[in-house]
Length: 142
Image (cartoon, rainbow, N blue to C red):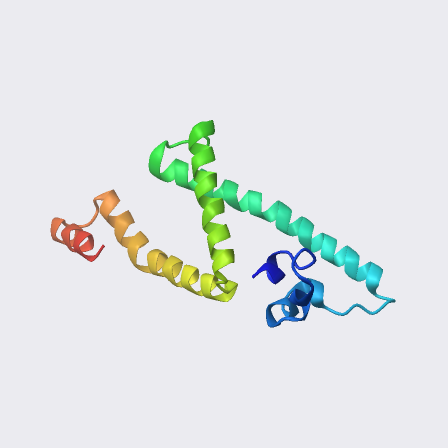
């Protein structure tokens, strides 16, 4: 676990372990390509540092606007609490060693299920265009 999170800071055998071999720092660098690979690694780190806060902002804005306060920024305390929960959830997934493919697979399946089955029924129910018996059936299905 430490070999993937902090390869240079972990013990000396971490980079030669099975977990250390999957870390991007364990890749052998040809001496001629070292400057280019260093720039590429810096670009990946920059991408990770910039994408995560944007993703947290999108989740925060959608969550607060849709469910609780009906505005994207309700104040410091609710935003701090939600960000703490989101960071704890991502750290838990990372520390548990869950593969990103598993996360994407289940997230995509649940999102597709909601988009295909729940959203059309919910929209039709909300608009009240459906007959009374159909609205009851939609509620029973959800």
